[in-house]
Image (cartoon, rainbow, N blue to C red; front, side, top):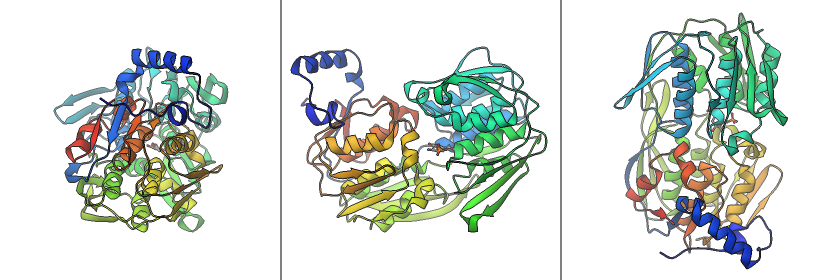
Length: 476
Ligand code: S3P
């Protein structure tokens, strides 16, 4: 099998000079002993055709398990994402006393009720999952015991002060590494005080963390978000019987969300819709390959998650929402995509919360567009599974895509087709891996990623699903 390998620009990218040949050989040796088996390569494909079903929504899957655990009775969940991140949440909830079992495609959760969890017997290892860590912190902090959480190298590097600070105000105590980073010890209390908290960053995880802590707090806990973020927590909490009030602020741009403490959450039957953030990779792959005709079924199109689709349409993409319906309280559609004809646009900063996970794949779409695509308001990308602004820039550079990075902006100059030929460092980031594999489907040369294993955190089966449509992704 031929190897695509640009040692100067790719493996040792980020603008640094190539190391001497002896170093290269040593690194090759190390890689051959470990990571090389996880490398994936995407070869140019002609077009994608067919019908696929989007995997379950990651955000909603986490919440379904957590709220099931906080409810009394048996919650059933259909369509749960069986990705590693969600399995980390399930394991942590089991450690707290929830009974969670899978029967065919249905998951059954017997909860312990609000405030009814037990002290975990060991450190909770949340792998790569920021949503697990931040949301569970709200549950753990409002229990009268001490718990410990850690994660993989990516999660241990992510900022946690953003949840530590409000939870401290409510009465919990923490020991952590600098910046509130994991491993984290949480000294919880069941005598939390309700707060009114304005989010300093647009973050659904921080919002949800505080609302979850507010469930086991007397009185009313309020979160004010100056910019609306995904509202799955509010929707699903109501569905489980909590009293959640939402009032628009700032002319409707933001929200004031109040939860009333000590509700008796009741077990429910949940159907998890497909994940628009995962569907994004399939949709963009179809958009960039002229002649493609793909139907992605069962995609959640909650307006607070659908910013990428608005953006792609503004770029001239042919995406039709078919069979629009409601699934488990969330809007869902089948997305019919026909390839070809993207043009560069400016993506406004206020759209960032509704497509925060989609900028890496948008950068790939932009690499195929006619003209420049300017994306603004991207500061939060630096706090994701990797510093996504840096990871995307390095991946574009490795594949000959001209671009400019600012403190919180990215401009990509499209060319049809981009050069490709690079080996991209994924930094334990599933979305970087999938994005650059998509880039390779239409580039002049194949594109490789150094580690495809993180894809299993959110989209197990990605490679088979893409290849079933006509892609050519394989182990390198
Ligand atoms: C998520 C919120 C977002 C998103 C993440 C999932 C959630 O994170 O990037 O993938 O499920 O609430 P932030 O809250 O950090 O923006």
